[in-house]
Image 1 (cartoon, rainbow, N blue to C red):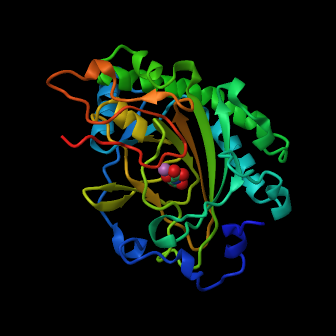
Image 2 (tube, rainbow, N blue to C red; image 1 turned 30 degrees about the vertical axis):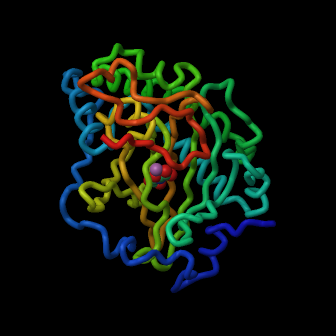
Length: 331
Ligand code: OGA
Ligand code: NI
């Protein structure tokens, strides 16, 4: 059966949206977003000569918000622009060309639309494409669009650059826990750490005040590194309030995910976030989820647990289909 795509629905509705996309009043962005104040999500200049300061800011932001943006991270802007252009071209292809990449049953990779059963059966205003981009040996090119022809080169190029940025961040986060530089990545699967790219495509929405793109969630990844397009929409939650995350050209938005909260025994916070949509413009984003290999055991790092600091989470095997994620132990 053909799954209904949000892109198709968006092209047939002008002034209203189907009931299934209207969120409850507790969720509607028009009623729940804090206006005005700077959200406080730190923007960190990675090229600052004072690298001690950079490390401090990253560690602090990971504890306070679980989210920060980085600029001057070393990925050339042309590489990011190419990644964005080929992704946009894919979503602008005729529907039947996109459906060639539709997710096979049970597959995480491929073109799709979540049939969200969560939260009162409401749906998110978004379609997506998922595929692995790193390590090269893990890639299944069956899920990489052949059209546009430069899709592969653009994505491979981005993955190589991203790997360097990720390594740098993981080293800093490892030191921030009092571990040696390499120990955190090792505890996430080392060189088998999987990089899963998702391209989110949020079509223009006639009622952005009532709908949400991606509903409130924390990422199941260890770390998520996201490139947005220039349409504002990402929001982060703090103390029960929703704040817009400022769009900064060429910045990468870093999210601490559940696995890192667990590994750090709660020192780093998996950030609660969601996205809003836009009336006139399509919003797009390219999060890359850094995930432990399937069935890899994740728990608080043994070096962080002792008599005075008991484990706050149970250890478990990383499993895509486990949604009871954090397994917090009542203290
Ligand atoms: C996600 C997500 C944010 C965005 O896909 O997990 O949180 O800005 N996306 O699109
Ligand atoms: Ni997310």
